[in-house]
Length: 141
Image (cartoon, rainbow, N blue to C red; front, side):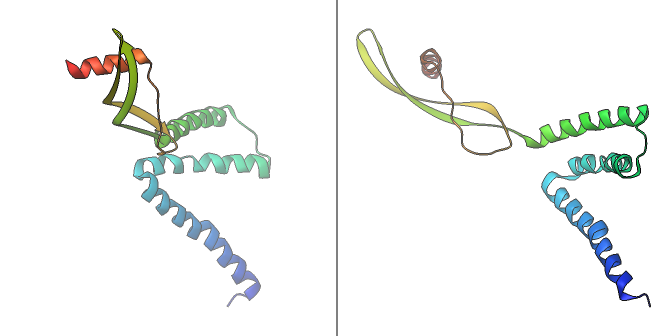
């Protein structure tokens, strides 16, 4: 039986190297889905290679630099896709305008598409008076 001085560090290494790795992988699968998780995990060899440059003083090669550029571009695309949430929903606008000497208040409801990054928080937007009058005309035709 190995001495306790060797068993405890081995258990700690196993927990960090295997236990946390599996935990984060399954959590990523649940949150991001299989395709995006696989894309992120594909970056792991490059992180390992980078650590070899830092810790072991390996040399950067042209092949490594080209590969890391492609991997970085792919990861950036995956991250942008992960953060973007595209949807449409209704908005209601109430406005008052005067024409032909009469003041009118109108409420128009319309729907259009939005892309949000990072957040699902509520948002607002503004329209010019011409846009609102155009929406009003469109709903009455």
